[in-house]
Length: 354
Image 1 (spheres, helix red, strand yellow):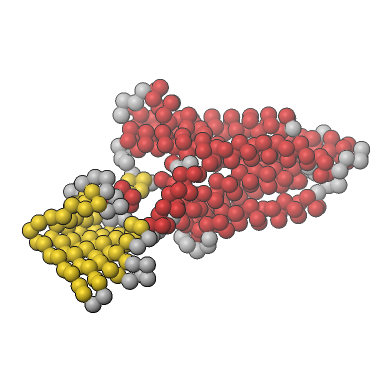
Image 2 (cartoon, one colour):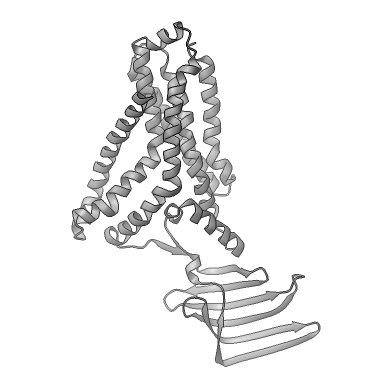
């Protein structure tokens, strides 16, 4: 168990150093051009970059380390010796599984909390200090939102330059989902918080067959609307900057408001649990592949492991892309690689050297 854990940490250290060197070469020019000190770059970017890259590659590191350790045992005929001594293959797997479970738990903590918390420092620093861009995007046209259970808001277009909403319509419904009143404004200015100033507005209320109309083309109306334009603003890869509780709250709020666009956030939420679990699956596959003594030894086993790891990453990215594109459900898209590779793991265990 300790040998496998040491091999994993060594693999993670080597690949982390390589990743930092490669990323540093691409970030060197922006760092110099923007007069960023070495201390700021390390504390606000590179430390969090190391955590981020490890979060992405820990399943592959686990696979490589298990193959390396198991292949060495097989090369020295230690696996065969254990089997001849009456120790079953499943019992031999126990230390590797315990190690993978430890790594799995740490990765879960990192995916759900530590990596997003680091991203809140890394991404703004990279965008504002290195790229000089906030990467903010907004859906500024045809905005539909539920203010509460009986109030609906529609805005044809929102202009960020002057905080002006064009063709705003606020509808009020009763318990029977019948329209009881609505207010229309050709121009509505957002004054901050939930304060809106309606200009050139028309208000209509209905009481049975009776209708009350208020029209004003000269006066404005200050009103409170439980909606802010900030709610439709999104930063590139915003889902990566939220801890899982924040992600769940955001998804719930967006769905309750009817704003949509939560597929990417749902996929990210499921990915954070599915990806760490793949460590256990890939560890089993690595052990089953490398436990047999073959000509080519460690080199052949590592080659097989790298190919399996590459295929797993490609499959994961494909499934997430389809999930984000509404082709498959977010839960299915996040977990289908684990399901398929679990079948591979079971087959390899079945045919493994006994």
